[in-house]
Length: 299
Image (tube, rainbow, N blue to C red; front, side, top):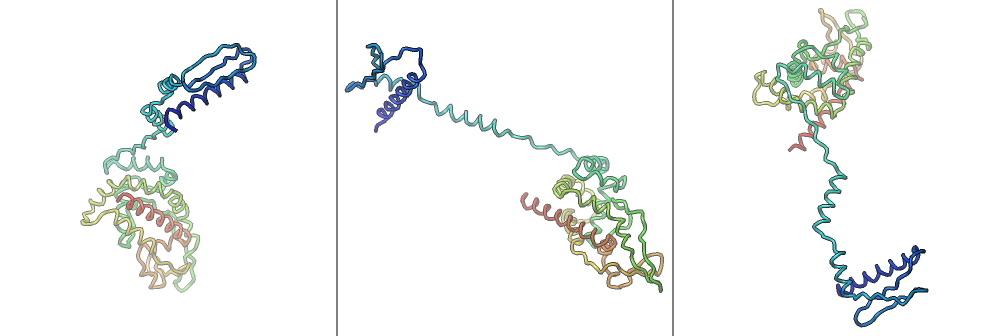
């Protein structure tokens, strides 16, 4: 079938459907008979009670009229579809990260940002008042070497003293209630979402790098030092609980020489207690995985 016959057949179908519609719905209108001719033959439609009024429409004129009025401009359809698609999928503006302050003026900024973070505000009561980033960098650098600084920490150390049970003959046993000194701090750290913590860390990287450069350590990147510090915590050795202690002077020492030779980080985790140590390690493991994933996606 050629294009002209196809168009003509479509016109006939439209007229017949229109006539049926008028017959079914036009109760008060006089019916009209329409005969379409195609030069060679004519078909007559004679509804009941219709006067001998015949309207003849040449098929050629119908074809031309349909072509002129029924054709759809494809150049118009595509832009219209694009407009509909744009309205159905509005573009959301990207969030704007707050501008970083200078390192010397970063304390107030850090506290404000933590207060706004999901799960970050409870951490504020454990922070020192000044030099937060510099002290944090020093602590991380120490942990990366297995050490733990005893002063100038970014976090407040519990005020409660370690409690022990005296066994006699200068031997002591760590009281398991001592572990509870760290419960609330570890809980706060564990409740900060991994995504929130990683995003906050990445945002602060320029300031952290600046603070690390002040230490005068060359040929290393602070992010690598941070990963090494996390690995030292994750790989820390454990020991049977509770441990026996001795006190040859003002400080307690582990009675087992092997445990006493543990790194400062490992002995700190022992003082946290097994449950707190596990919780902290789990959170750091999630943090490391997310940090490495973001780094691989950026590459």
